[in-house]
Image (cartoon, rainbow, N blue to C red; front, top):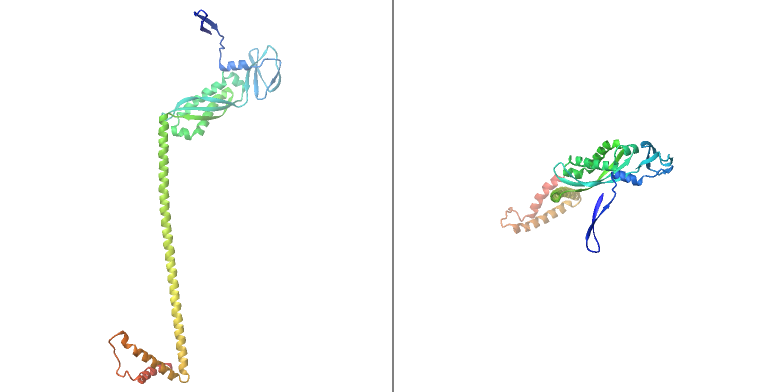
Length: 326
């Protein structure tokens, strides 16, 4: 290639000088191989995890295994050196259109390994470049099948689909794609703003729902508390009434037993000597006490005609009493 450069001499005049620079024509892979291919020194030591492709008089001859190898000078030539290690390739950023017509800027990382050095050497001119281009086209194709929301949610399935598509085409090249990982997904600023608004609205919605659920749970808890309180109060009242009724029954039973005992003792006392006289004295005392209280509660009093005859009144009381107990 010819380059022209303008120079200025000491007198201030301008002159043109033409410089011819040699240019290496060919692909990037050919230049790389040309600079890294080992020379035929008859005795060669092949490193581990490398495959050296040997041509004899311009035709494929064999692949040198790791270790000690012998070649014929002049006739044999090492044409390709393939690495059998896992190769990591950065897939350049590219634009793709999703199913809902959103333009995305996306890049990734490709992990591959050469399984067949013969196919990798003679099946394609530049294996790495071919796989990179295939990964980009496959990525655009797979992104066109998904909407923007699914692109972020289904990155794993998207990666597996890209790997599957690459392996179908790269099988003829002796290359196996191990995995593909999407690094960054860039969306337009306006789409990003709308996504942020959507996220904020979704968060507000979830907050409102959670708040309403909290209010409902609180109301349910309060209602349950009131219900339990009423149940416990009614049970307390029931227990109180039962205890009160039992107490009244026991009191009545105790009064009845005391009254029966008193009557029994009184009857036993009346049957003894001078019992009639004691009974008459007791009745007379009660008569006098009742007669003294007649005018305290009311002004209207109905009296018998023989009120002052105490002995007659005692006799009237004693006769039926003793008659019933004899």
